[in-house]
Image 1 (cartoon, helix red, strand yellow):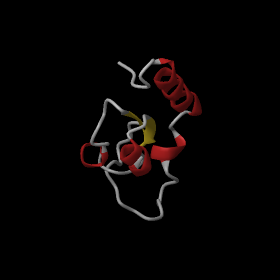
Image 2 (tube, rainbow, N blue to C red):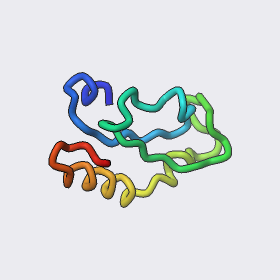
Image 3 (cartoon, rainbow, N blue to C red):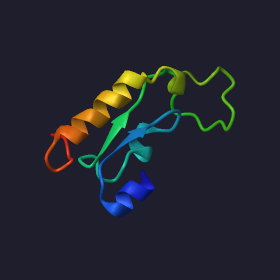
Image 4 (cartoon, helix red, strand yellow):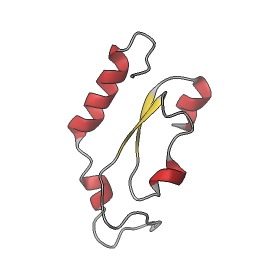
Length: 79
């Protein structure tokens, strides 16, 4: 997302165990967030002791749908 922000192009950001508020993109209109709500967030483990439910529960379809919604917008920014 840092490269997309620097180039000012839209993108999808997948947030896993980090704190949603402090990890969200600066431009939420340009960069859309996909995450799975889990009770163990936030965590900052380098190796998850419980199998990364925050990542495993993010559905591929959710990411693809978000990307497609961005691509459908003439400006590349979904509303």
